[in-house]
Length: 324
Ligand SMILES: *Cc1c(COP(=O)(O)O)cnc(C)c1O
Image (cartoon, rainbow, N blue to C red; front, side, top):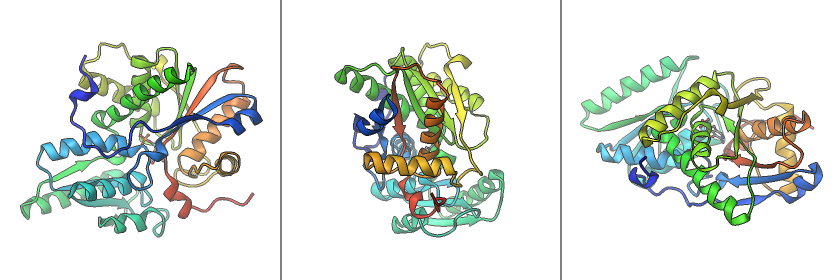
């Protein structure tokens, strides 16, 4: 098997991110809850995409790229972090975003602050967004530029390696704390984070179940297995990957990128108990999913549960939380 250090990565993240117990919430719920602070990855507002971009933008640099393109919704954290990371590396960024949902404020302010070009595409389907991205790439090539395209969420096997690395970090931190995590819980939006964590858990956390909370209705079991297989192939890791490794639940609410009442309650609860911000689109919903699983008795009584905080605070300034 190859090692993660065999893969070129640009240093964008401050690692390891902190991992600590949520004392107030644990007391309130009578559980052992911990949090992995990937909201503190150290570029812009932090978040999970920074770990993926370390590998993806190293690949872009190796290919001589001078401009990076990516796609997403208008409030995409991934697009914003691509803009911030490209700025740091002296590359241009073009963000091709769906003209749907919240078209002002939040991450759109930051995209422009980081100097990215924002192209809004009036389409419901990502096929149309990617078609526009292809046209823009052709135009850039005709101008003598070298573009590099990153798909939605950076969810390709190479990006998932960032979360294989996160699982390794968690294993080291768990050992230092003297804790064995029975479950790790993360939000699933395009699948790369969950796939990396789940493959990484197989490699480095053999006693840990990786639970994903889907925030839209994509078929995440299949997506995760596919990305896990791709990442394992990159690593030349000889691990059997089976559907039994994948535990996906869903908390979508009224729709992707729209706040749900339970998600909003989770945002407020973490803020008021622990002074930590989660967002209404991903991490608030994942936390609401975790609370629901706790209520349903999904976890054994004394389980040590780690919530992987994947960031997203920018959405708090764009998406309205329903009233209490
Ligand atoms: C993108 C994102 C996720 C989901 O990660 P994927 O790898 O796309 O599944 C979770 N939380 C936040 C804050 C995100 O921006």
